[in-house]
Image 1 (cartoon, rainbow, N blue to C red):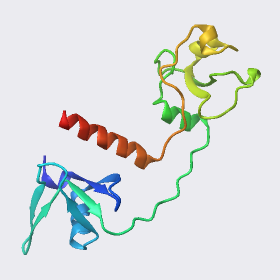
Image 2 (image 1 turned 60 degrees about the horizontal axis):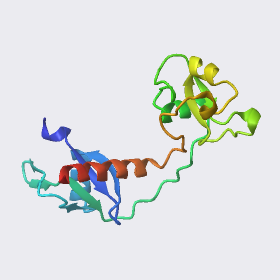
Image 3 (image 1 turned 90 degrees about the vertical axis):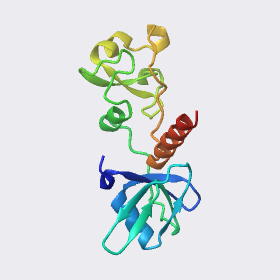
Length: 168
């Protein structure tokens, strides 16, 4: 793999992993003194050669400047967002054909149209479940529905689980 296609993990000032950037962006952050190298592992990174400079680019950098936290709102509960959360898969059988929205606790029984009560279901599972709860219908949810979290939280969780896997 070519060096310029590599990515670098960027941490905030308080060491929260924020995102991955391409190596060119990492070089700009290091040269402009907006970031500093972090050495989390024994892996050193890459040596980048220019006509007048040889720069060592680590695999992890930490921002020196305070990154303005962008406002992030929980998205509305709608078909597109629930499909995205559930990865376009029926939460009962795993099918990806003829998908609909399903209320885990039916609205007729007091269920709400909220993130923790709406899942994606194929038409077959949705009609089989009908106006019952999954337990009453003898159906099992593949995962518990919940509201989406901030993208940085997802990235941080994935990053630390990858680090943990490498250490084991």
